[in-house]
Image (cartoon, rainbow, N blue to C red; front, side, top):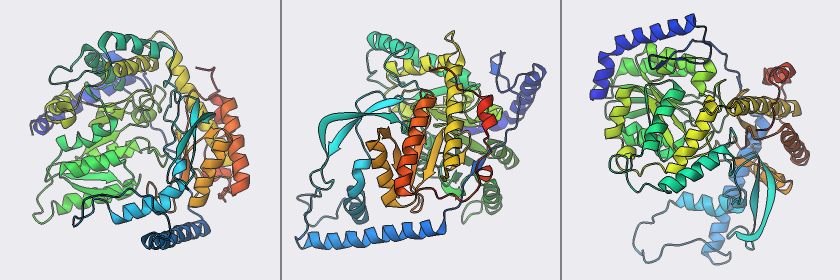
Length: 553
């Protein structure tokens, strides 16, 4: 590919340019930030230790969790037999007119939906009728037939929202961002009705891409209308047969799909385990391609910035070291970290104080911190020029809606301070304080909490499927909206509640939520942690005092 040849030919020149930029930044004493000089962002490296804790599953809980699923499967087979002979009611939608055809649906998938998921489906897909802010309205549903059907009652409950990815609180229906989007809606309309390469390339899209590149400190960027497709349809444009992908075992399904569509060989490495990654890299380079043992055309390491189920943060300094040592490319998915991490909100790169140009392909979404939709790819001008003509999401997908683009522009300018206010910095400060405060209190209460101390994604381990469901229902009764996750989204013994912090939460809201969680815990007995708090977290009361909660935003 022309893109690969260009990068190879200019590799030495780019390295020299990076060193000069870093030297200038050091001379200007710029820390965890950048200044615009000659069109490039200039950084100074500052190392930061990643504080991540994953307490082992108590053996007794693991055994009972496996037995619980085994019992559900046995009972499910019994119910299937009773339905087959007509004793038990069967409300499953069936295919008609396909006698003699192979069924379209997987047997186990149908079995799981009927006998396991159906019993607890009221805990998921809950409709809301408000903006997903600090508070939201959850519509009430009832089932007359044990969750075969769920009917709306017309009532709703106002609950504290600990489930939405509204990290910076920009999911609002009032304020500067909403007003700017409304003006854009009147000017451009709701949709573009064309692709970027035809008649869908508006001036607002070009403005957004320039702003994203400036925000990230990279040469160029490209935006897409759907975050999932940003991964799934751009990875195949970069790799093909004869290439190798090393993917973290807990990567998002959009990354997994993109890897499969690329045609490259995919190998996984243990989550956030740099030793295992290096072993995989070394072995793959030594052995080469299967059968022929030829050298790989390209090797791409794919990781996420913040993992949405684990609350962990990628160890970027080690990833950059390994990719340079073994001449591999690095693809960083910042869907949950962009806007939510770092003193300036620029994600994992900002969190560690590193040079963004050490990451070859920077990806992120606008669906979380920016309260909008879509995603982006950022990097060199050559990379973006390559994707504009090779990516299916660029050539065939409809352009981003103009009001959505304006929402991103307004919120991003607020984070950068380009709106003339300090609202963005206040939101970043409040999110950081809320994250530390909530995590510290959960540790003090004796729960097993996964992830990094600075991650706004806070998983609380529950394990048993019955308790996972009961926790969700009991919290909703007490006006607390939470998300619970179980198999197959996690491992069988990995059932959990996942809380998402937001800058729109106040300390009073978090204290109320913690009181509810404590009350539900007394019913379900969820304090599984046996370790002292000093071994579970490095957060102290002094850390909270150093970053006091700011005023409401």
